[in-house]
Amino acid sequence: AGAAAVLMYTDTRPKTTMGGTATNLTLSIPGVMIDQEPGLAIVAEIDGGATVSATLAEGDLTPEPRLGNVMAGFSSRGPFRTETNWIKPDITAPGVAILAASTPEKADGSAGGLFSYLQGTSMSSPHIAGLMALVKEAQPGFSPAQVKSALMTTARQDVFKEDGITEADPFDFGAGHVVPNRAVSPGLTYDARLADYEAASCGTATPLVSQDECDSMERSTDPADLNLPSIGIDSILLTKTVKRTVIA
Image 1 (cartoon, helix red, strand yellow):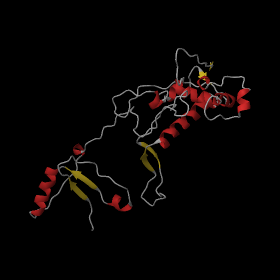
Image 2 (cartoon, rainbow, N blue to C red):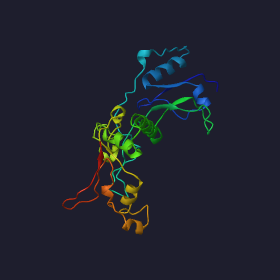
Image 3 (cartoon, rainbow, N blue to C red):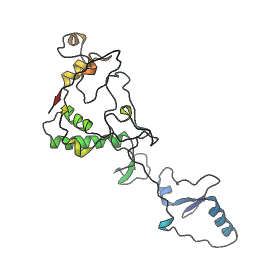
Image 4 (cartoon, rainbow, N blue to C red):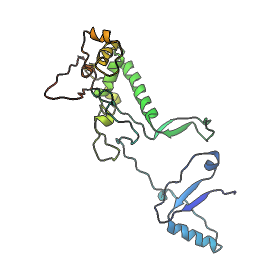
């Protein structure tokens, strides 16, 4: 109806950030919410015939604090339901409020821009992919499994669950939060090739090769022995020995 801006006051509830779906229309009209008391005072002035002017000063802005090192509520958690000898997830990386490339011409017709704040696995996984490329550049002789190992064995664990209080565990973050500078010089690494995965799969519900091939394997077919940089055991009665090989 020709409005240049929207000033909304709340009821008895606390004021919230004005939001909603960004469209060309909503982006053309700025909006802000204020508390009930000043809102009623402004309405009274307008009803009385007065012209009301307001200035938004820098000191009047309320910052929204962000607490880092906290797992996002939407982050997928372990354990690996079909093979509990393998710990999942493997690692975690930043995935909330990431300033990322976007497009001004979105497929759904909504307004866009060249950049936007995004979140999700689609933000976390590019961090890992980019870091794997950096590790490979620094260590060109590493196999993909060794690059993965480098990221996992150098991760940090000072991360909390989504409540911001409870310490996160391996079923939240795997090996931990990735630390880029450490990963380029991990010391020891764990390597695993296709044949290792094929052998380990023989002990799972979904083998990658035929039963005849599994029966002829010369390496361990125990999933717990897959040369991963993490160790998981689905069940144990007294003792169990697992095998790992490291490369210096």
